[in-house]
Image 1: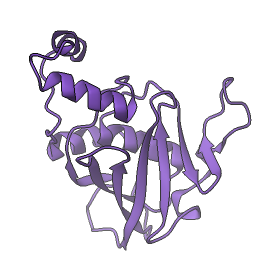
Image 2 (image 1 turned 90 degrees about the vertical axis):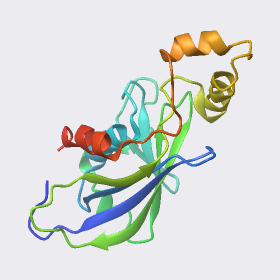
Image 3 (image 1 turned 180 degrees about the horizontal axis):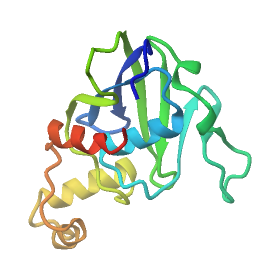
Image 4 (image 1 turned 30 degrees about the vertical axis):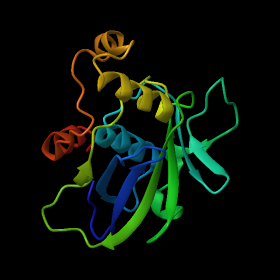
Length: 184
């Protein structure tokens, strides 16, 4: 997607209301449209894209129209990131309105594209993304509590639901960047 002299935004993505933090550092063309940025977010965070989402800048929301929320969102397919924020700017990406996963995206730097480099890309991160449908930040905290205590009354149930072991500290940059290649 790197076209000519398009600038590159270095963005720190932090999942809100989670401690210790779950975060990623990504580089995307500044002129990326929000619908594609949504696909980038799904890839780098490890979500399954099975829920609605929206980008929020101030009180304005961008997303895709739906029967559930008619007229609530401006069309994300027609808006570029650089039309909304520049260096130091922030926006919120919300995924799964029921669970309420909010990601803060902060534009850390504006870079010149590196010759031969493919964008978007993930350059760093920490901790695993919570599993889809675990109940938002508070449900995730409960899930981790149960999984870390074999004597917890829901330990077996949660292990079965998650499909075995879950390492909340795991993050594989290479795997994440490979997944991101599918978005290009």
